[in-house]
Length: 299
Image (cartoon, rainbow, N blue to C red; front, top):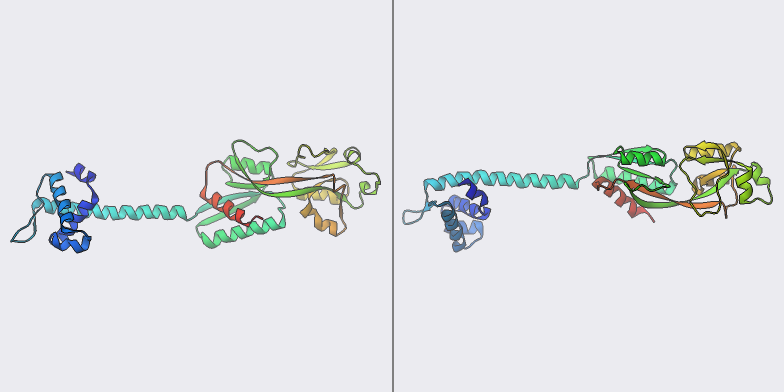
């Protein structure tokens, strides 16, 4: 009997419950919004499937048989369980639609001010709209961000990556111009016939560990006697006046305006790098939401 009921159409069982609770087929029409013949068909189908008579109808009025009482009690339990099932499904949908948990983000040091502003807007939107979502932000060199994303220590990283790894997904987010700079009192600023060759051969360079010159730029870094693991560290060597090296133009501009740094051969010693958002290939709704919000703010 149970096997047959599990296979049976719930509509027929719901119709039977209405018949019982309304005390007859005719009385159940308004509740079910069905014709009397349709309700009778459901009832006949149930009786045929179960091989029992469920009710008696006649001059004495409507009455359930013993089997009818048993089925009604079983239907009550089943419909209650069905209601609870639908409630749980809706909860699952609701929880999936509401972002929660912790989104772990890695950023390189000294992002452009405009991009920092966009990141701030997305953070504000996250906390305003998703109270169950938490954000964790750390600053690391690009290669460390890639490793952290690949090993599931971070969910999203934004930075400049020289060699894109096959096991990760990269999405361009913004471009940044890099120029060659030195202190205004550096010896290179006193040379009238300064050239890329002289820069490569005659002066000490500070090089960032993750900033490789793109192929085809027409020059290479010269003698490297200082290594920097961040843009801030690169800036220290340039301000010291001991080295020349590349910095993002937006980062260097305030120091140029203050008369501390100057660009060397800005029309030649320059290149543009693309910064990417790096994620794991497996979709994450929190990452997708964050990048979707960010993409909407990008020019």
